[in-house]
Amino acid sequence: MKKILVPTDFSEYAYYALKVAAQIAKKNDGEIILLHMLELPHQAGDAIGIGHDIPEIMLFKNAAINRLEDLMNDECLDGLKVSEIIQFELAFNGIMDISKKNDVDLIVMGSHGASGFKEMFIGSNAEKVVRFSNIPVLVLKREEEIFNVDHFVFASDFSDEVRKPFQKVVEFANKFNAELHLVMINTPSSFKPTHIANEIMSNFVSNYSINKFSTHIYNDTNVENGILNFANHVDADLIGMSTHGRRGLSHFFNGSISEDLVNHALRPVITFKI
Image (cartoon, rainbow, N blue to C red; front, side, top):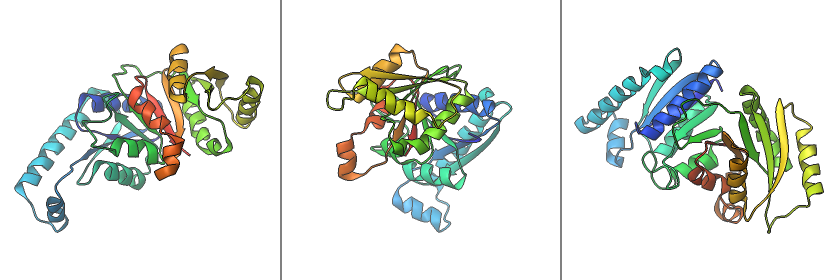
């Protein structure tokens, strides 16, 4: 977590994300990249591409620069290395491009809550970032003055495909010296007897060096409710899930649990791409 990307639209929710990103960076001797996207009409984008200075565009750009400069001087960033980027591009494309070009380790974003990322993102952009980012994405819904992760819930079916992203889960938990609550949600449509579920989880964790962890089986009507209710039960500081990034029908039949959690959970949610 040496490089943390924080997309900002200058809303209070984006500021919540920035404050948490700063705390994580300080714990890991990391740096912050502040990104603001200027989504302009197609013609304006063409003009930028061929080098014309359109007064309206420059006005927006200069205003964004001034606001980013103010953010960079915020006290929460004291002592950190911080850089700023203004990108003329659609939000989702810009976040993906910048994260790859800068070898980002973590994306931290703010969200309104149940209604989605209305202020920063339009339409399905928020869903795309969570679903398709190869980099872990941490989403904040509310202000976290002190971002301590003492109890980290990670929900999964603990299949073999989760093994690779799970290493990043372990690293994150160990960095915060958090207890990692590993939970398998049993639902009426996908039920495993306790002894089988315990065996699956026991075999799964045997290959990892986790500082503190516990395993749990939780029964509920569906997976999302199970995760939210279990997180409430252990008073989790953070909820984690792996995402498939599936498209089309495969995604439809698989459901969108990670995206739903990001929209519905008040607690911070972090996603890891399979």
